[in-house]
Length: 363
Image 1 (cartoon, one colour):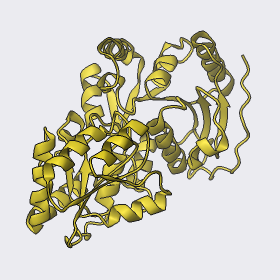
Image 2 (spheres, rainbow, N blue to C red):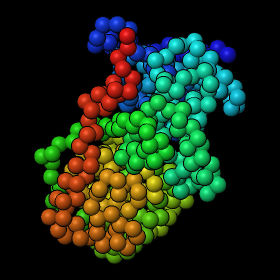
Image 3 (tube, one colour):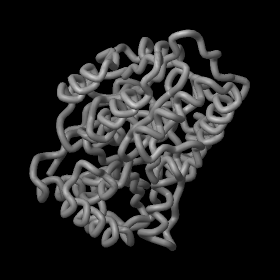
Image 4 (cartoon, helix red, strand yellow):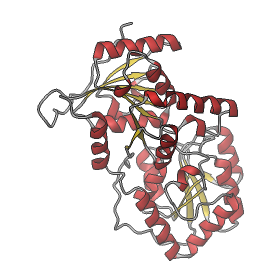
């Protein structure tokens, strides 16, 4: 089966060393938002390499992250067998040095393709599917079984978070794991930043899509438990039922904002509140760290792996922690410094170096 790859809109940066740049075939689920966004970062950080991208469904130009638009892109056909055959054919035609599968479905397809050798396969789960609380128990068990059975067909697991690294080590104790950090958009971590002073009418802010993963209901219960003059704001939009829930609790929901406006509003907050039920990339937490904000977060495995202080198992405890930070400059500084430490390796330089370790520079 022959796939038609769109010609790249931009030219690639020449390889820094002599020889042919490494050729990378990426397979990504177009509906996996975190995976798609991360892939855009990776391609931007490794522009000197030759990138080919297979997406599970066609995407319009507006749905493709900017970093991916400079790659050769093709959509896989519908149907599991057809996709497996197309991935195998693409591997034979392109002859890549590495095949990088992004997210669970892509990882299954690539690792089930018999023509792709194990030592060519890189897998990024972008949040292991068996950790998703919105899936039925049977689906999570099936996902765990698939990961366990396919782990030997993985040369390197490229993880985005420490929690993913812990799980990858459990699935394949002898396997190679590389942490490829995400990088902040529109800013860099500055250790000289300090939390802004709390003014009258303090604000506690969350940011992200209104979805089961973010668990807006936990945020609403925390706001209700706070019972103070603090203003609680959710930056973002999503499922209407969650918007109605938050607004009925007296929480301001901004709706979808341009990224620049959302980050500007985030930087005016006094405390960043994170109530996710599970985590894949820590993208909004990273933005809060860039803004120098103290972070109050829900206690889940992914955040315990970051060693953030004051993680709250219940909405009531989270509300108490928010109020304590608003009253204590010392505690605010402790929380903001802990957030910066948790993401100290999330720089473009580190990301590029880790990708070079994954892909090599070619021959």
